[in-house]
Image 1 (cartoon, rainbow, N blue to C red):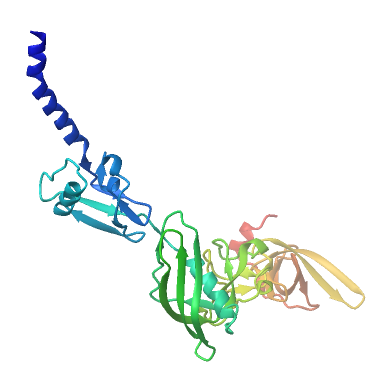
Image 2: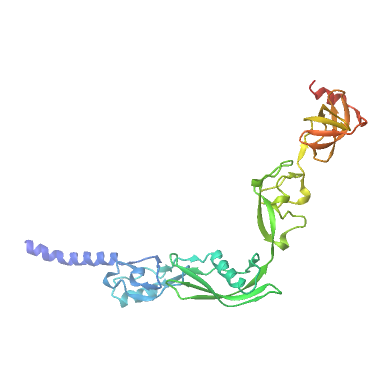
Length: 326
């Protein structure tokens, strides 16, 4: 009885094994390849001992290709895989990861090439329409140039970019562009307000295309540091000379020392500035003793020189007197 039952179960066991094998072989909807070729195991899961068989060339780095159901079925038959498409829509997307060559890698080597041909070392390279080529993600890359030409008169150049990387043939692309002259420009490192005095940490020197720099732009740090802003400025914005002035040494409504000097005599008095002013500028000041307003010249921090015999401008307005501490 046991033998008869075992024999009766054999067909069912065979069918079960066949179904299991059928389920084990399946296509991969997305096949990621990192080499130059596509292998059987890239397309089919559990492809068996022939999984390392090469089927053809992989797409270039960063590109993909489609393998449709009829092609997959033909490959499965050729290599004895128990697989059939369930529908005409079955396909495998074969994708090869890649990364673009860094623009700096391209321009650094190009700059070195053009410097040998007479380009200004401070020029900025303009490469219209440059699309960096794709290379394998982990591959070491070498960038070189062939047949380079540079015209000093027009500042135009033409060359052939050569990109070499492991796992792919050398790529060549024709490049043309211009070498644009640049000039030094002082820009703010932070947002600054009206009246701020520029410190060394508030400004830095960069280079910009000459065609983009407006007239009157500050080009030296020494022309900016220590000056006072006459209007606000944003971070990374260039300083304009007309927007900078000497810092105010006398501040409106702040106490000052009035200095009266004549041959053989020097007198001082307490005063209060009615306006802000820089060294050498004229400012109206109220004498706190007489409450008269006179004009003087700023000669230092909080110091105003009044000429002998200076005529008072006016009596101090009552509204201002009310705000002055006695």
